[in-house]
Length: 291
Image (tube, rainbow, N blue to C red):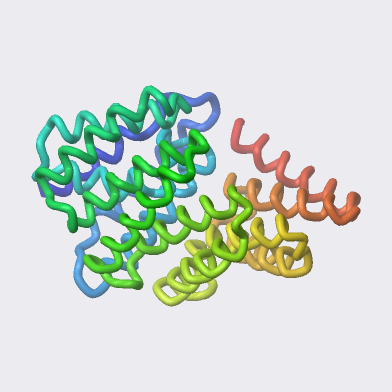
């Protein structure tokens, strides 16, 4: 039980301070996250961790989790809560806090230090070391230093695939991060198969109608929209919205974000009236969350 308590305390350190009108929702989700990390590992462990990943992404997308590490914080925090040096934990936590504030240059030396210490303490093939590499890559990516971020993402992905297997949620995270890096550089042909594989992992592990697949659907839809493949993007947005409505309810902040993304697509193809309806609905959801 002490190990479980330490794992959750490490996660809770990443939760943002009081936010007007959002404290109740934050507390509900972080409590749910604690429940997920209390679940035993084993046969069902991968599914339980996907649920924690989904909750963390909700927290990140609604700015209830300070550190938007594409679930990296959730995976790293429990690992660093047990067995690593305090110096490593402190370096990572400080770097993550600065990253979450958008202070990328200030975060950089802390993440570099965490990588150095992680390699010394864990070795170059440990999945937690891969998470440290991934986090450093996120800092470089935030600065637009893509050439430096790319090998870090690739190394992290390779370690996760070898250590955890090709169907593990961390592999999907690595695929998404690398795909996003390619998308931001206009390397769409390289990004697409990575997004597709990440989505396929989620669908196989969770099922095609689980709310955990909606991040992958949205990522691929955004890529299609960027490429002008509007019909394909629209189908993915529609599917994601249906899943979120059923799984999360009609008033969830994650649904408001998805509606906004779909509205942006509709505006780009001159379906303004439909876009306005979706934007109005998203605004109502956000207003209710702020009450």
